[in-house]
Length: 398
Ligand SMILES: Cc1ncc(COP(=O)(O)O)c(C=O)c1O
Image (cartoon, rainbow, N blue to C red):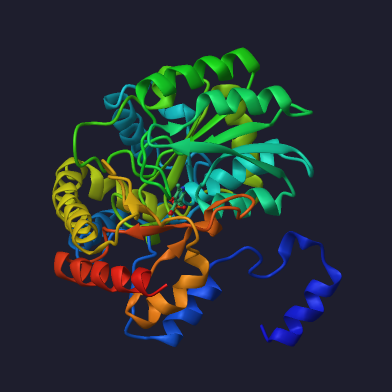
C-alpha cells in the first residue's frame, strides 16, 4: 500500500490499526540500510543451520500421502495425534493435560491474541513483566488495554512487587501474562519459590495467569523449575514449535481448563476456522520419534553459542557493564552504567557492525533505556566474539 493510501485509511480509523504503531522493525530496517554489513543480533529464531529441513520434508510427504480428505475442513481443535503428542510432552514436564484441553493455534502469537480477545475490553488492566515480549505488548495495546508492568530480577517476576501492585490498582486486572522460563527479553528463569508464591497469590486474588513458554525446552544447564501449569491446572498455557523447530511453520497451542477452552475455541473458529491441516500433520510426522533428539542437538549448539557470548562479553566489555547469564532460551540481557542510552547508541553500534534491540521496546511505558537484548542462537562462535568486540568499542566511544 502506498504511504498516501495508508495515511488516508488511518485518518478515518481507530488507533487499533495504525500501521507499524509501537513496532521496532522499521527502525531495525533503517539500521540495516545504514550499514548492510552489520550483523543482526536482535532476532529470536532458530538459525537455518539448526532447522531440520530434511525431516520436515519427510513429515510433509507423509502428510500429503494422507490424500485429498486432508484438504477438506477439519477439527477446530487441530490434528488429534499432534495434540496427543503435545499432551505427552507436557506430561513429561509435569503438567497433566488432556489432548482435548489443547487447541492448536497459528503460533503462540495467535494464542496471545485469542486470550486478549476473550478477556479484554478497552480500558481493562493487563499485568505483564517489565520488560516483556514486545509483540505481546502490541496485542494488548491493540485491544486498548492498560498495561501495568511488574518488575523482574534475576529470579524472575518479583512476586512481592506484584502483590503491592494488586493492592493499589483501582480495579482487578484481567490476567497476568508471564514468560517464567528463559524469559524474553531478559533470559531469566523464575525460581521455584517465586513460582509457588505466584500461584498462591493468584489463587488468593482470583488472578488468571497466562504462561507463555516458547523456550522452556531449550535448557543448557540443569532442567528449569516446573512449569506454572504443573503447579496450578487453571493456568492458561501457551506453547509453540517456533523455537524448537521453526517459526515459519506457524504452529503453536493453548492448553486451557475446559470452561475457558470453550471460549478460546469459539474465538479461534470465528477467526480462521482452524489451522492449516497439512502443516499440523507434517509437524506431527516430523516430531514423532525425532523431537527429543533434535532438541538435545540444538541444546549443544546453543550452549556453545551462549558460552561464546559470555566469554566475548567478559573479554570486551568496559567496567560497569553487567549482564545476566541465561540458563536456556535465546537471549542475553546486557545493562550499561548510569548515563548511557541504548536507544541513542544503536546507530553507532550499527556503524561498527552490530545491531541489537534496545531495552525500551520491551517496557510497557518504554521507561528503561540502559539495557539491550542480544540473541546468541543465530551466529557461529567466531562471529559472536567479533561482534562483542565491536559492541565494547561502541560503548567505550559513548
Ligand atoms: C515470549 C514469546 N511468545 C510468543 C512468541 C511468538 O511465537 P510464535 O512464533 O509461536 O507465534 C515469541 C517469539 O519470539 C516469544 O518470544
